[in-house]
Length: 103
Image 1 (cartoon, one colour):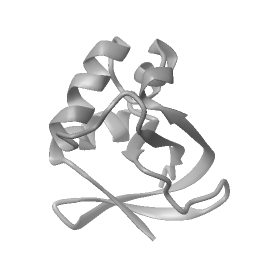
Image 2 (cartoon, one colour):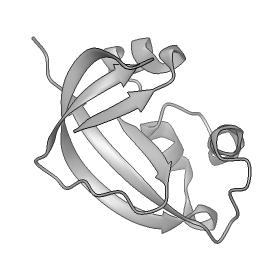
Image 3 (cartoon, rainbow, N blue to C red):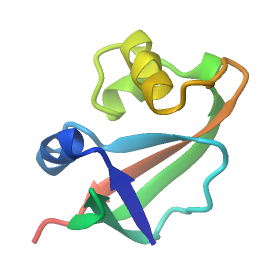
């Protein structure tokens, strides 16, 4: 399995500042899964999933935003809507927390 990221997030992920990704809908991953992290479909790291949770967009918190590399939930929501223009407050998102394998 792989998770693709915008290339602008690669350094944040590798430095540990981004330890989660929030994706629209219900994603089929579970703690313990090992995934390949890619940017522009090119692998840059592997990671282990440590936690998966579901929330409505309206339930996202500043703590969720910080794990995803943002300072505030408002910034996080703005960025999510850039990727998912029709994302509403009642939509379900999957919060996927991961640890990058250090090699």
